[in-house]
Image 1 (tube, helix red, strand yellow):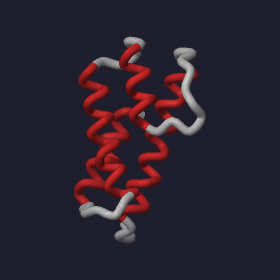
Image 2 (image 1 turned 90 degrees about the vertical axis):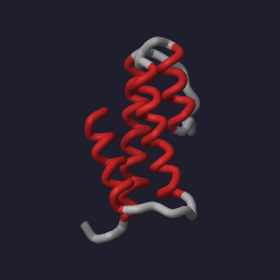
Image 3 (image 1 turned 90 degrees about the horizontal axis):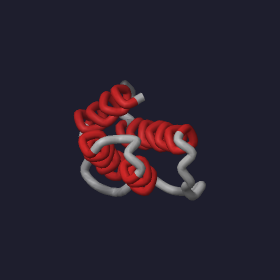
Length: 90
């Protein structure tokens, strides 16, 4: 709402990471404390806790999040897509 798109995307990405960690904990899957989204989602997929469609969706959202965290072009609509996508997962 205040045009802080990058910050909103970064915070949404943190929420996604936390959710993936909670899923790994729930299924008793080991991970490194500082693992970002990709290793977490791969671990969940390889252990049949999410399907390939869910994995690809999360990877897409992670790519948008990465654009928020690094110098690159990011639009309000992409950040909105990220936030709405994460809401569906949570």
